[in-house]
Image 1 (tube, rainbow, N blue to C red):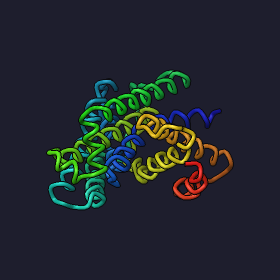
Image 2: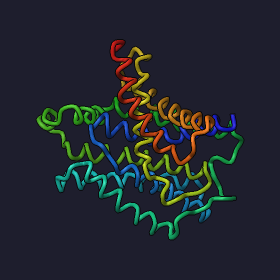
Image 3: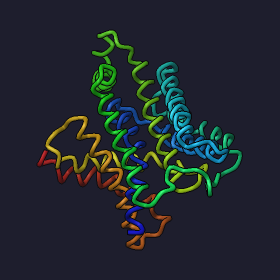
Image 4: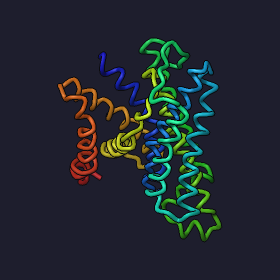
Length: 283
């Protein structure tokens, strides 16, 4: 349980990022690599403010705004400069590494003895992380049901039809990327408080972890009879927790920590390939 409970809490903290990747990848069909930079940005901004004795609740909207700005930058590069969204995300991610290091002033920031939302017992911390995840799930479900959310979903499905209806598809993409990266920054905000420090390299490869959560969730979505947005969001949340549990079990089984990145890649391949092949007849 010493490994399992922290893994569940981490999975719940990463759920916001998984929701963001689901939004860009499944709603807009955009492979957004900005995630690696905006996750670190959220953690860095939170660490700077909290280490300067700002209350975490006051730091939260600033973190969300910072993540949203990163998404807006990617959206503007993609829509206004007509660059492929993958390249736009790589450019912003690369820029954010220097920006994050400039904000930090050093490679890492410890948050020992600083205010944190995770200062309670293990049970309280897990309940708090679950509360964040459930609130986000409900807010996203509500957003997807609004006219704005329906317009975003339609943009990802058929841009030509949406454009013919007079909807600004560029604005929809920028808004979607802003929301997704604000969610990713929120994950960074939660994780630096849970782990007690921010590090300039904390976001490297994090997009793969989020992708793994989304794909793992979709792999056992067969157990849900509904194909609604609500069930999709639930599977993303479950996938985020499941992925962290799988890594925890791997560590318990004796897998060296330096092999976890390889294990992550293998899990994504299994989820995307073998699992979908197995469940295909039942769909």
